[in-house]
Figure 1 (cartoon, helix red, strand yellow):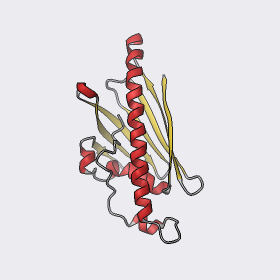
Figure 2 (cartoon, one colour):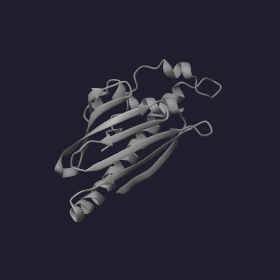
Figure 3 (tube, one colour):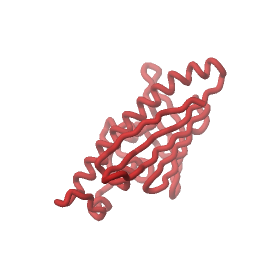
Figure 4 (cartoon, helix red, strand yellow):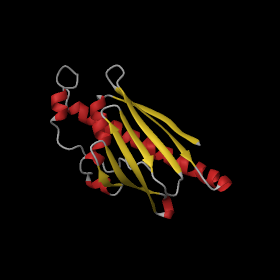
Length: 179
């Protein structure tokens, strides 16, 4: 096994908003921008089966199919189903330290095909981690944007205003289609 991450970011938004930003394309209808990166194949109450489309340079686009489990508001787990990379498990965990939200990512990537698999794994892992970093930044930007719209004059989030927001939409280049 080869570890992925860890990666972390802090954002000025409550965990519920951050969770909703990540979960919206899966649990609600994806935005137009996300439709090119994500297709929900099956949807349950706390879990979806989703196809993720990731550009891989001149080779085109690769598709990975993953189960995505939601534990509101603190955790989202991804498990890749068999495909070009033998084994991948990822977790995004949300914490609420001191008026902000911490979003931690970690995962594991496992190859097959012995030496060839290990060589391929190094190349895939680097691209995978870059994609995750871009996704974390996109989540931070959108969550902070939504949280700033819901701040009353006291400067603290108003949960009623956050809950009353229309469906969340990620920016077009957000990249939540985790490899």
